[in-house]
Image (cartoon, rainbow, N blue to C red; front, side):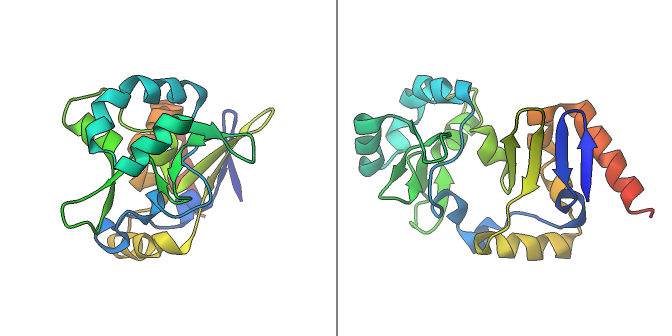
Length: 192
């Protein structure tokens, strides 16, 4: 089933499935695993270049080397702008906690510490939802993979659906009116 709101086609997975990030279990692997960096909106590339001084000291020497060589992002095989990555894995904007086991976002850290007013790329904020722009509409889909299995389990335990967990980033991307329409659709869907 597809839910249509404005110019978006939303997978029913967002209202049917459960999800709550479980960083204690996954250790931030979504910022490490994958074939490319995080998708960037056009203006986000420029924002990342602008805020680079605010996050620079939190980045690894390897990440700094990649940024110095190719910049904060690149165009991937699918012609999308994505964040640069280190050794085919870590996003250049990652850092590890003090015990070295959990991968975290240096951009989000700088935001929480008041060093920047940019939270992080919207694709990161929305994860595990991926948005694909087509000519006449945007597809809003749930990306499922083994890295987030514990988040699905925790979501089931807490009874938090994907769209509920992602309320803030969905509003950031599409607006509060859009989110409220999705919430209404979800409530109607479960009455059937």
